Image (cartoon, rainbow, N blue to C red; front, top):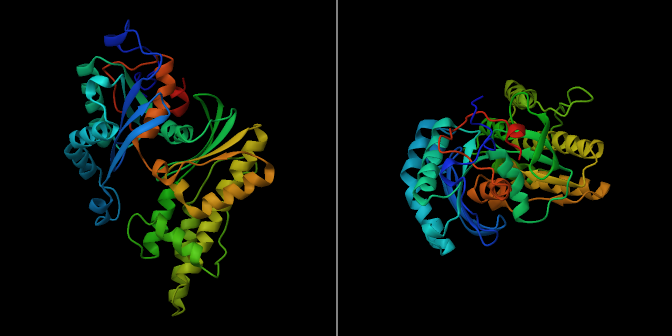
Length: 360
């Protein structure tokens, strides 16, 4: 891993001796890790003045998934316009900005590079601090935009490319205790959705069909080793495909709604079961649900029920803060802003980046 991955290592050379405002500060954040171009202006790490998101879903849908080269090009085309719109909605101007936050990684390297270059240019032009930020830290601290986080906490991260259980021992101190060994939840949803003949992105379609289903094809649960908090969904995806092929070989029409419900129930049982188990083992005072798949109605409902049963407070961001957005990047960057842990202008985009090493 590059030596620049841990952005807390040294302050930015151009603001090393600069006095920073104690209150009323504005962070402008940029998020370009995948196929959303997003810019936000956030006051004091909590108050979202603007959070502009330009989605590329319609562009990538025709290819059945994200095409990295196209995503990068779209970010370049959109960046200046999105920055201007974010400033306009927040009713501020560039000289009002006190710091620049940007997603440094993980993500698509070309897409990340567009955001990092834009952020470095703004930081240098405005002579303000630069904060390279971890994408998953952003998803986790999206919860801080809607409520106070109680430590220690367990974060269940479910997004397109990540399924993880993270222990937050204190503010900004991350410990990875479980992760996917193959497909993440979002990837599994998209692959199953394709088998069920839904367009990309397929997760919301599968969720809706599962909610409407009156029957369920019971599918296996992959719990792995008894003491493991890791996940594996490739076998579940294969089980769905096997059921479809079995029906067709018999000359029958596959029961897509029952399959969708069976798939979703299997996923939800495993991720929520492991999250609750982790919360008990590590003495968590709160559960955090994070990432794009956190918008899944079935998952939100089940986790809410389980947390209520064990008396564990639960925080879930609204849907607009679950998907990739820049406000969440500002919320995570705020922890480093307050500690004056800034990045230098030789900051590099990182396709693979350790959350634990990014800790404050």
